[in-house]
Image 1 (cartoon, rainbow, N blue to C red):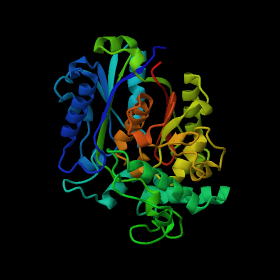
Image 2: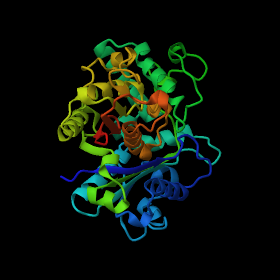
Image 3: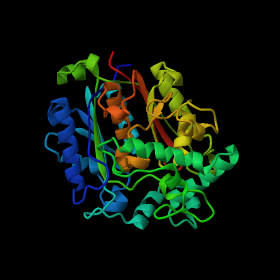
Image 4: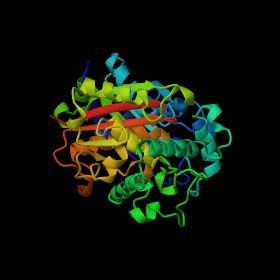
Length: 401
């Protein structure tokens, strides 16, 4: 197979983009990533645009047409990609597959999500309904906010199966909020969170579903944001005036999907997630012990615990302890979500998977803020999920040689 490289990455600050439209977000994403690569949009052969809530929140389909409206992007092979919260990761994989198939030498993965109104406010009920469409209809009955309720049940089951405490899971959010304080792109960069605050029911921190353990600080954010990743083959880099020795390689990737029906998947041991991750590691020829940092899908703290297990960093049931014991810290055995993760960096759904790979690439280039930079980092991983632990996309990145 052809080596695939990250030619450039660009993202917006995550949080509130106020009156910025989808068209303006796409234009800014393309302009930003092209400026990073010192090229023009005309040099891009194809593109994938990821978004999950454009239909439901904006009554807009055919985002590929909006992307084609950006100067230099017209009359190209462009597709729209939706795979729930794994839409961004899937857009990257689709770009890679086109490059492998010889359909050009450069490909752009763009992710956007506009989840707040022009004043920055979020309609929680409307957003909750939109995201709820990515679940099994049989799971929605009686749930006001479908996904928090589903993951509250997963959190309860995880805690009961492995004797895990709320305090251990809350430590995940504390670690991520601390990282976000140093990330200028993070939504919660001005918020400080202590473990006592995270476990105490007071103020904004409350149980989201009566009788279930999920609290406000266990949850990711409702976020506006965009991210763009320019991928290239070796020939594509040469055309852009770049050199492989200066670029991060996407050395391995994998994607798999479990059935949407709740009774047909094991949320505490999601087979698709494990398969996608094993595929990425095998393709890259590395083991979990050779990964120094990873960006993982922490839509809720319990998912971050599961992610540590899926990546092979912790045994089943030990993912929460992996975080609580400091192994996921910047100076830990494998630093997880140094960006702040979805919980503190933000979760603009279509852009999330792209931002994971982009930040991991920055880690390998030594471009993240100094307090977040992992030392002697050679390999990084990402793990992006969609739905109630259903669709999974994993990658392994290698530092410039």
